[in-house]
Length: 482
Image (cartoon, helix red, strand yellow):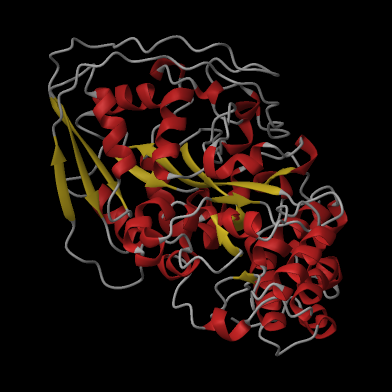
C-alpha cells in the first residue's frame, strides 16, 4: 500500500537520516575524541515574560494506531490554547546539575536558555558534553556511569535498529503527568515510535533557500526574485552589470542546485500515492517522477549564471560558503538553514564584511511561476533519559522549554527555524514567513524515504558536474552508486 500524506508513523523517521547527518555542525565519522565538558552556573533576577501560542492545523494521526490518535497534552484540532506563564514545580532553592549531551561543539543557544531557567532555579547548573561521532557513541554514553539527563535526538533514530536502545531510553514526552505543553509544537513535527510514544521534543527546524546580498540588489535597482522567470531575468541583469556568477553554491560531490530542485520535487510528489509507492520501492522507471525537478536544475545550470569553477573552490558548505558570501560580490548564495545559522557569528571573521558590511536575508529559491517553497523539516530535538538520576529536574527544564517563547527564543539565538505553531518569522527568515500556506511543505508529509532521496541527490550531482544528461539520470535512477 502506498504511504499516505499525513501518516504519522515511526517509519517516516529514516528518511531524515542523511539530512540530519549533513548539517554543518553535526558529528564527524572519526574516532571518538575526548569529551569536552563545561559547567555553567549563572544567577540572574530578571522577570520572565510569557509568550502567546499561535495557530496551526495539526497533521493527521496514524490510521490504526490508537496511541497516535491521542492529542498531545493541551492540543486541540485547530489551535493551541493560550499559554500560561511558567509555574515552577519545586522550591527556588532546589539545587542540582542537568547534564546534556550533544554534537554541537558549542551551544550558546542552550546556555542562553539556561540563563532564563536559572531565574527560577538559581542553584541548578548546566553541564553540556560535546560528543564526537555522536551516532556511534551516544548508546554507550547512555549506558555508562555518567549518562546524560537530556540528549540530542533525531527522527531517523526511530528507524535504526542499532539505535533502538537509545530511543527506548527516552521518556514519553506525551505522558500527561510530565505537563509538557506539546500543543505549542507543530503537530507534523511530533514523531511517534512504534508504541505511539513521543520520545523527541523538536528544538530546531531547517529548510533550503538562498542567501541574498540586498545591497547589490539595491545598487543595481533590482527586486529580489519571487518567481522562476524573475530569477532568470535578475541573473541576466546582474551578469550584464559585471557579476560573473549571479548565483553560487557548494558543489564538491554534492547536488549544488538542491535548494532549487528538491522543494519543487517534493511539491510535485507529495499528494501522488502512486509516485511515492514507486519511488520508495525504486521501481524501474521511477526516475520519471524526478524528471521535471532534474530538468529544472539542468535548465538553470545551462543558462550560464553559475561559475562552476568558482563554486568548486569552496572547501565546504558551511564556513567557506559563508565567508565567500561575506566578500560582498555574490548576489545570491544557495544554502541550507544550517549554514545560515552560522552567519551572524562569522561576520566578525570576515575582513571584507567588517570593512563593508551589508544587509542580507534568506529566501526560498523561486522554482515556479508562483514562486518557491518552504520545505520545513526537523533538524534536531531533545530526549530525556528516563533512567536519569536527576529525572525530576530534567523534566522540569523540558517543561520550561516546551513553550512558544522559549523554543522560539532558542531558535532565534541559534538562527534556525522554530518548531512552534507560532513561527513568528522575522529578520533573516522573513521571506519564508511571507509565503502562503500552499507554498509550505512539511517533509514528514511528503512520504519520501531515504533511498529515493539519495538517488535524487546523486542524479542531481551528476547533472551539475556534467557527467550525465537528464535523460541518462532519469534512466539510471534507482541504481546510481554513491
